[in-house]
Length: 568
Image (cartoon, rainbow, N blue to C red; front, side):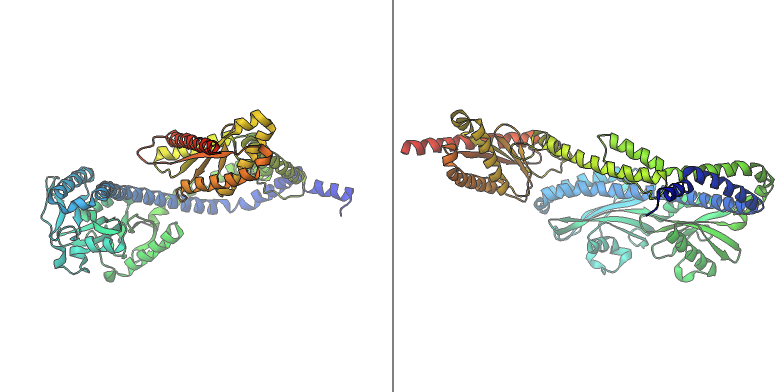
């Protein structure tokens, strides 16, 4: 172990003041050494950073704008799907009747037109039901006319084409096989005589395939906004499809198949994939010179690539070199800034301690404290002391929490804890995702025992009843919400009446064992109610039904007890 003198010297050596003084010395050396290098290195770094940021910003912004169109299509198709699915799920059998089927399809078509009118890139939309519902083609197809309005078109016979024929029936068979929403294309749709991209959602009801809902985007109209994307002076955008073919480029406005790529397109594709992997601009060479590219993935799997010539990117370097002389003037200010940063970093443990102190002092926040500093200086000693103190406080707060939310007599959850869980279930009810049952319980003959042999025996009775409840409601929270009133909240995996029957059986056995103690029998009346969506507007509705059933059960139990007593 270190002696007191050695420990004092170590603390001086590692003190905050010593560090700051050392930093000043290091900084002075840094200024002298870097004065000759800062101009060249600084200009290169700034130029690279700015060019990368510009390409990244342009790429992300352009991808975001394109994704908005794709997301809008997805959102529109999903809206139509959920509406069609809800109707289909409730009235699936009625679709076999022609009148109802036509009314149903008219409603879905009206919603589809409303959604598609807001997206100018949409060329067509459709809802095609499976032939299981009707042997002949059933559904609808609308195509946008030259005036911008949608007109219904005759349905094609799907069975006439091979299932692998993507250009004719891929929109039907691909999502059906996938059993989930898919983006299809870009591809040439023979039915529309146009290049399209399709977003299609398969409809399954009760595990049975019912049809597909989808929209087609006009690729030519979709690519129009790419024409205006320009990086620096001559940089442009290139759009790759999911198979790495060029869908659009300034030099390939009609697209270019992967097999027809020249060495320039191959290098562009490799650099694009590298930029996607690193999420950072990548450089590559072409026959025209050095280029830099940044790429973003679109939500339908396509890739947007933004490229620009390096000579245009580096043109700013010449301008910046004219101001390199100023770097020597501001070097001291930069050094002071670095010093300020390093001092702050050195004092970061104190900031952690300050934040931890505020966290401990706020009763509404999580009190889990994490202090990373492990040094041997004064701050390190303070940090270790604070850790010990925070652990002690955490155990203390845990003990206080237990006192606040546990019933002292029965060791069940108390009324305050019940109010909290009630608010949780109330929120679930309002969001429409609640699944629970409420069991309300009451102890019969407690008043008689209190009045005849005293409240101490009554408290003991409540403890015995609580023990019975714990045996039955294993894994479910139990709450004492009044003098002899109890409540349990269970999920829908359990059958409430089975639990009630089990509780009354266990209680009856316990009552027989306790006859000498309490000089009379006792019972637990109980009622249960399960949340019903659409019927129950709030948690209290479920509780009220359970409470009423409990009172009914209480009357029945007392009636049986009177009959049993009169029979004696």
